[in-house]
Length: 554
Image 1 (cartoon, rainbow, N blue to C red):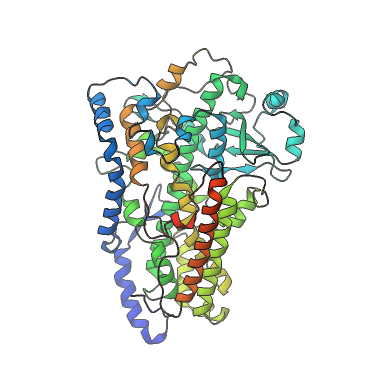
Image 2: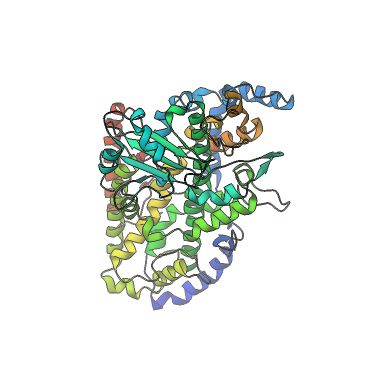
């Protein structure tokens, strides 16, 4: 039955005080990852996943039943220590287990490499090059300008730059992993911190033009690879994919969604009473996340063994922890708001680019903001009522405080208007739902086939255009071994299910019309996207509201 929400009042002050004393013990926290951000010391019983969640997970897992003979044969080959003989050995669950087999069948193609920059697991790193947002200074453009006409016909490099058709991705944050390589099963791991240059074709799809695998400009051992470079170009794309999945898992996904949401959850339980209107609104979007985060894939356990991701992704343990710490410190709540983020990446007014996150994401953002504004206005008669709400002000302080708070940079330290409160709450809901969906759910498609996106490389990246070492066997041998690759695929398959979709929760009678309106808007968007889907050359479902969970549930 929906909770009847109420703002704090002197009449129930003692009851609320007693509640907070109890709940704060349950949500006691510590600072993790070089004492940077808050994580609960123990997951409260109320946060356990429950039977419905376990059933949904098992139902998803049952999809592997047809693959059992293949899985068993893979295990037998592992026990017999049979070597990997080709890329097909990495299809642990069969080709049909992937929602779009084209991305597996064409994993080395330029077309699908370019597509992943806009519909893949780490689309949030894409920037458009403009006069105000120039290409990185350390990207060596001498060869690119000289050979550009061999890659793109009908337009010069200068014309493409002037008309805003160049895009780039810069992985400079990974330099710490490059400098401190890890090791897995006795094999040294390799990762690079590349810069990618892409060109927007007339179709709106990005075409890769150049890859510089390291940050040093014009170094003899750091050439700029281009499509005419044959196997060296294939290798450059492989190492770029290694960088992309490391950036996504460590920064875009784990730190700036999962652990960020954990901070939101802790502060919300610490400072908002269970019937506070903002708590009631946020509660459905805070489910499951703590129990998911408790299955630590990164940090060492009591025996000193890192989690699967901590061991298998590139870089040594300390470098990983330092990177995730830096990722949280540099996260900016205000800058992460979708309209602000798109503008900063110069993608806010770029309809020519095929980039569903900008188009469909913006629609969901605006719908969510309107929904939350209407909800906030229902409970707060004016801005003065927001200023007078002691709990919501304490919540803001808890989010932003550095000494004993959640340390979220540029989260408002107080709220003086209904608009500001609604914007912040709406952004939390968007982060937990649509944003997470766009980053998490493409993972099995793009990362479940290890050759397409390995967690680490196990051979050095090419350092010259005509590297004599490069052969198809060299690239195959650079991939992870069978067992960690199967773990990679299995994790992404297991977490590819959904529950409790966005907008499907119920509120108390006076607020129910507001969420019903929100639900109808989301439904209409789903219908529009479903109608348009057959006309799209590249289906994209991750921002269709009928596929978006309302919380970080996996």
